[in-house]
Amino acid sequence: MTRTLIASLASLACLAACSSAPRTAAPEGEVQAAQLKVMTYNVNFGMAGDPSAHLLIRDEDPDVVLLQETTPAWESALRETLSDVYPHMAFKHCCGAGGLAILSKHPIDPQEYARAPKPGWFPSWRVLVRTPIGVVQTLNVHLRPPVSDSGSFVAGYFSTPEVRLTEITSHSAHLDPDLIADAYPRETGWRPCLGQTGAAQGHLRKQQVGVGDLFLFFGLFRDVEKQGRRWQFVKQARPFHGLWGWLQIGEVYRIDELSDSDLRWARYHPHFHGQPDGGNTLYVASEALQFEGRPTGLAGAGVFGGLEERQRLTAPDAASTTQWRLPGCFYPGSVDTAMSFHGNLARWSRDGEYCTLKSASRGQEFVLDTIEYPGVVSWLREIL
Image 1 (cartoon, rainbow, N blue to C red):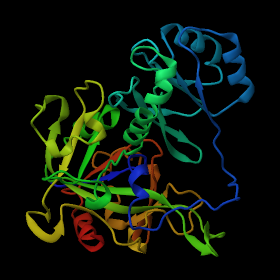
Image 2: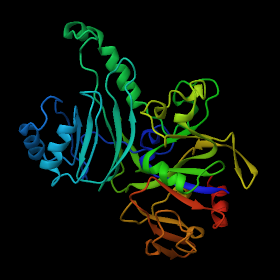
Image 3: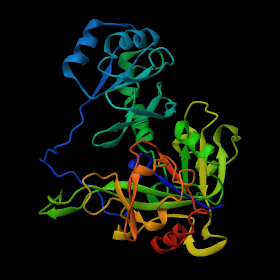
Image 4: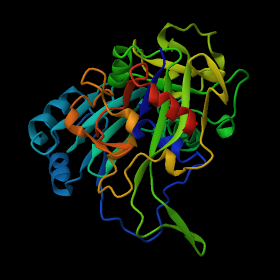
């Protein structure tokens, strides 16, 4: 069985900027109307419940707060005093001063929780925030302080800068999905791949996604132009969702079940550096893309050479990026066979040879079984 899986922009933020499709570039000196205020704050694990911390957060009134050195005692105090402002909270307690937390006014979706690369001390935590300006990907990090292994601040001042550079490099290089061969130094045998865990992987497992199924990746784009030496948004252009890449599943691995000698080429991938997690899964691309058992002449994964109109998802005159216009073959035949997260038929309407969809703002993968929608396979042949 072959299915179409439309993976959300939340999964794509890091790599979208590496693709050859048109990209969003923030022009210097221009403030966008939609804004998000983010605070990061090391609260000190030995000062749980410090009133000045609570007052500062309230006074600054950020939309999202990333905290370091939280503890169970800090969690209890923060939930008691700030839950009226931040209904969405998540905490990870670890190794004394290694706790991390996020407080948010908007829904959150915790993702990978990763160990620090040696000789770093503290983990990092990637969390998606579903804001009015779109899905924002946050990475909460607590870099190693300038302290040596023996506890010396003097020695640590000179010995730890390289450690922090290693941590920053490791945390920021989150190529996932990782589709472009020359985006990173590769080990022999490398293949394009995608890591998934948490609620998103639970949805894929429930939908019985496996070998032969196809991911389509989309991102948030806006037209840009060059003025002198600077890139800036085209003033009248609106942001939109567009497809930028694909991956057909060739192999599926539960990462915690692999031995140290398995998939040595994939050990750079961030999903190999988290805490033990039975749901942590790696999807590896097939060597070649096939439809219904027939070769297409394309690689099993890749990115489009440019962003054409046929790869655009957002309707041309839509007021919102989530108002999609799709080929008519996507229109659901019934609630049971509709694309996952879109079984409410009120989201859909017909529009001549197209159909329109108010796409879900929450949900990291939308799954469609093409056995029920053979016209979608024809559409895939046209856009790939």
